Length: 265
Ligand SMILES: *[C@@H]1O[C@H](CO)[C@@H](O)[C@H](O)[C@H]1NC(C)=O
Ligand SMILES: *[C@@H]1O[C@H](CO)[C@@H](O)[C@H](O)[C@H]1NC(C)=O
Ligand SMILES: *[C@@H]1O[C@H](CO)[C@@H](O)[C@H](O)[C@H]1NC(C)=O
Ligand SMILES: *[C@@H]1O[C@H](CO)[C@@H](O)[C@H](O)[C@H]1NC(C)=O
Ligand SMILES: *[C@@H]1O[C@H](CO)[C@@H](O)[C@H](O)[C@H]1NC(C)=O
Ligand SMILES: *[C@@H]1O[C@H](CO)[C@@H](O)[C@H](O)[C@H]1NC(C)=O
Image 1 (cartoon, rainbow, N blue to C red):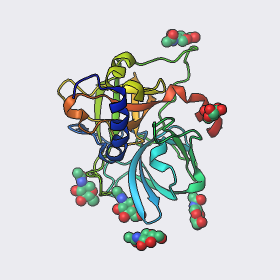
Image 2: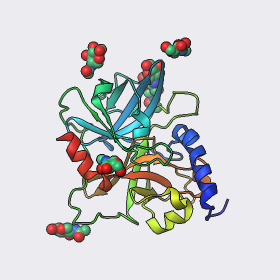
Image 3: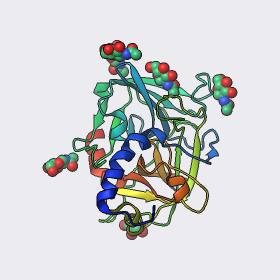
Image 4: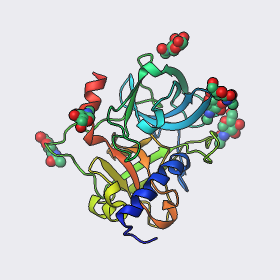
């Protein structure tokens, strides 16, 4: 596999990816997160009838979570984990769990699975969440000065628990993260071709660190001094991408600022 895949091949390839990438997304060779390091990180145990799946999300206010559409589309309910590092320890200090129903989930109206377009959804929490050292919202970038900031070449943090395999719903117990540069869109396009839209943002996975992105739905955050800006939602990638340096793709938050505002105000 070389950089420039034919567009046709890429599309077929891409669709196949959706099957296993959703399941394989995980932080590889990431570092263990410390308590309070990613206070905006949300864990989601999502139920579809009698099956369940694990995803990440991001707290963006006292009431709202952003996640990926592909995680929650057609879900019946979900358990939301806030302030967690070890999700198997329900007595963990600062960890809180909330149950939400289908009626609290808003999937983007133009979410399209075949192209992974508009892979974004919102979850409304049942109560107003007070912020603490371990639970705190990330900011949606708002000062866009007409056109959005691309964040190209900036270092960003992807975090998540990551599933262990396709079939199991078991996840890694503890939160991990990687810090990697945002790839130039034009360069990313050489890998992904027509599968990459302007509403997506790419994270480099090369430099031999064999890092993958975090759990589906989870955060890609740019840290400006002490402020966490949510710039992406983990969407898709190549699971072998870690070895061959294929960039991971995230939903670009700055393309959805208005949509988020409309539905959360
Ligand atoms: C998610 O919830 C189901 C029960 O609805 C449970 O069987 C499963 O272990 C949970 N997954 C995780 C990762 O906690
Ligand atoms: C899951 O639910 C479906 C429909 O309600 C049912 O037919 C199926 O047997 C259930 N599977 C398990 C493993 O419980
Ligand atoms: C996570 O919590 C479980 C349950 O309390 C515990 O058995 C396990 O050792 C913890 N894992 C880590 C890495 O701390
Ligand atoms: C979810 O639905 C169940 C059953 O309809 C209800 O008992 C529960 O209160 C609802 N929870 C929320 C957070 O709305
Ligand atoms: C969804 O797509 C329709 C048709 O292209 C468009 O009119 C509408 O504005 C889109 N909705 C959003 C929220 O982007
Ligand atoms: C956006 O505008 C603000 C003030 O209006 C300015 O401080 C900031 O540097 C501008 N940012 C960019 C990326 O141009």
